[in-house]
Image (cartoon, rainbow, N blue to C red; front, top):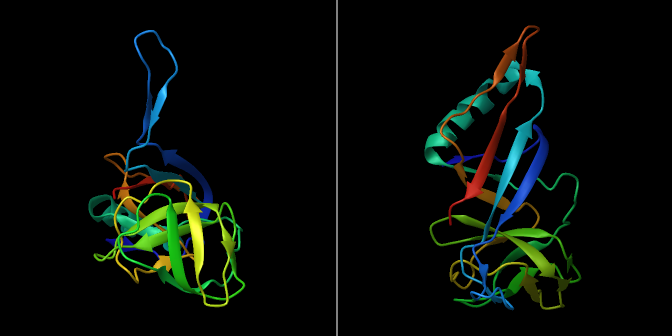
Length: 198
């Protein structure tokens, strides 16, 4: 697994929600029945800004290796500051559905609708989630949050939750990785799509 600690070179991001559910309709196309299934997840098409050949050499090497091993990077918030939440963890084991209980946050911190978070499982894999109904953290450092999508796995009590710098982790889509070298020591055309596997 290739791990990036920064996304400073990211120029643009096109996030996508991949819905694993669906609507079942009868033969007469009557009223549909929505079926939510576990497994809905995210992918993001990311482009990297213009850089010098020297400045982009290590990044290109990382992408080549990540194409084979997977990539974990901070989800590009592109200017949204999610504040200083403290050290949030899951408050209780085997939580399911869309509602999660957290502890260890800074009292008074507000987890706002639209914020992103990732939850880390026992093997160290990050699962990206979006906050649909947030809330202010109580004096005991606890808060209940409703996610936009279902949890995909039953996390352990005390599992780490990344709110200040949520991570997206997965495979680099497609079967090739390319970039363009130009005169004047410039590298352009670096782009990739990362899709969660968990």
